[in-house]
Image (cartoon, rainbow, N blue to C red; front, top):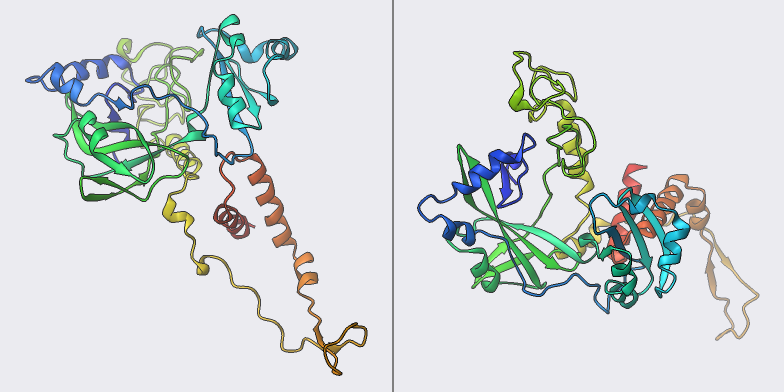
Length: 378
């Protein structure tokens, strides 16, 4: 992705933390000649009738389902857990329940079919709740560059092919003065948690890159990782750090509300924002492509060479010997060395914990990669 990620967005998904009015005005000015035609052309296009479900052959250890109240102010996560258990008593297959935050809980199932069946359970409608499968459990988003911007999202959806099923096509848009301009970069959402290596437009092959969403910054309190829609904090000015909207600011002082520096709180130069972006980027680098799962042998450290001084002991206790000679038995202290290697043991323990907490499919390549990561960080 470019260094101007903060200025790039999907049509209809404003990322400007200053306010939505500016983006709304720009959206109306998109394609002044075409008007509604251009807006429809770059509208997000998804597979008709698609519903997020776990595939029957999914081998995940856990199948999480998120539950929220139908109303925005429903604090389902703050309700008595015993009361919630009573509501879900008739639901089959629940392994455990977890509180995620004030307005969201998670029910964990051990079978994909049980998780899918719960989505239409009568207890949800009866208690004004909604349930859905988290996108990260069944979908992966990739970025594809150099796609002709004259082609609509709908046409791309029908013409693009890949090793994984395509469910959504989005076009990136860039703000230029008072307009939203389409780019040659698109994002494609696939069914499954692993990205295909390539995607095809007719016979043209394009590489698929991992999509890292931009860091979310609230345009109300100007903090990170949440939106103004759910923010309960006071309004903060992005210019002077006062308790008012930036549109009402009359101060000549420029002061960041996050680091107290002499720049706007939405500035890309803010050290706090840079730090948050780095954490956000590392957090979102867990998804892999099909190619990255094809690990070569040299990606795994070679086993230690057997010592030349290892004694060879002749055993006289072997029964049913095929000849009159004794069979040699190699005595090696490698196991003892492994057991006494605290670095290796710690890495193995960390790997087991990470795999146990992960919803990803446990492939040998994934396990190997997790172990290598823990070995290098020990």
